[in-house]
Length: 79
Image (tube, rainbow, N blue to C red):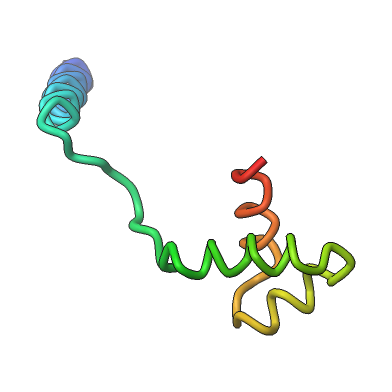
């Protein structure tokens, strides 16, 4: 019997959470972790790739003090 109440309470919590998230989205709130790199760095990555397409991603990443995966992600989003 106690487990039934626990399950009901959990479902109510889930429902209230989803209602709150939906209301926040309608107000324009965006969840998730904020971006850490400025848009300027993204533009620099694009410029470096366009100016010298033979430059390796590792070289670009070390020049900008960013990870290679971030560079790849920026390049993929641009395409």
